[in-house]
Image 1 (cartoon, rainbow, N blue to C red):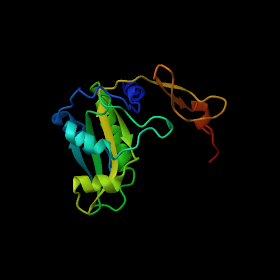
Image 2: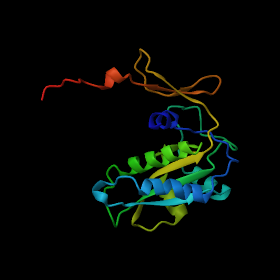
Image 3: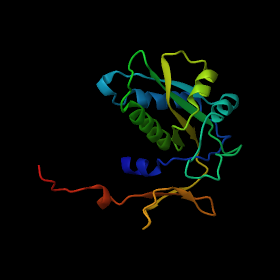
Length: 194
């Protein structure tokens, strides 16, 4: 079952924007992050939830989408996320959140997939602008923005071609292709001398 969730957990960038995600659903996803492991159990992450058109539009304007798709400026109106979870590090708890943002984001996204939703971790953020818009106190730094919604695109995993490129791409039918390294290419040895 976990393998199925992982296979369905792709970086979706186009959504059915009119499919509302309730605040209770977002709180449930954050609760999964809350219950996840935390380095030294410090639990420095805090969250801001957004599911209204006005707030979502304001957040959307601070984000960069799909760096490998140079000709694409991000999802158009009607295909944008219907919700966001903004992940913050509370500097009064920890100056270095270590692996916590990645662990928490993966928990949130796996929970989203289980509910028939999809999302994308976004690190390409105009953090200064978003922090100003949110009127955040100095002790909070933006770690990630997680875009969420009901996926409107198909994402397919493929093999890395002979040219070795890891760049994702879209075909003429707007199917998003993501090349992955072969298992044998990432395991150095199963009998490494110690």
